Length: 175
Image (cartoon, rainbow, N blue to C red):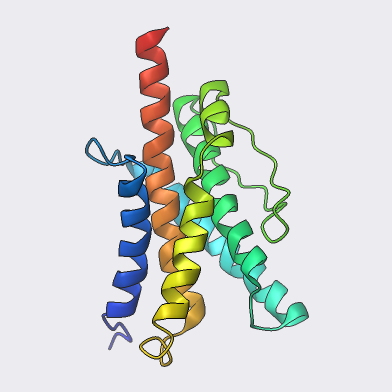
């Protein structure tokens, strides 16, 4: 028997990130997906859960807003790297440096790096997510806050991958 349940709050957290992307016109075309990026997402999320477990054992379960912001920026940067690695046929390895402190190294295609460094997407995702959890605190009281956060982070990663793919494709059309 599975312990799977549907989660309306998790769906709402995902929608919060999707609406953030829509507000920045990042969804003007169908969302780009690939099997390789789905595998990269799975690898990244598992590694992040492991790091989060270590972090919470040392710092407690309450995450400060700056840590939440760092997590969104982290998955945004890792999406840029994953897309770059996919286009360069390189293995997907994720350096976990900067996950909690915002000092995240970025190793990506030059066009993607330039575009991503000027983007407000991860900051808006973090802000909108924090506002969502604050405004719906009563509705979310019975939710596992970590699973809710990771649902939002997964969507940030997916839509950031789409953004990176679109950036690379547009750059090559111009070049």
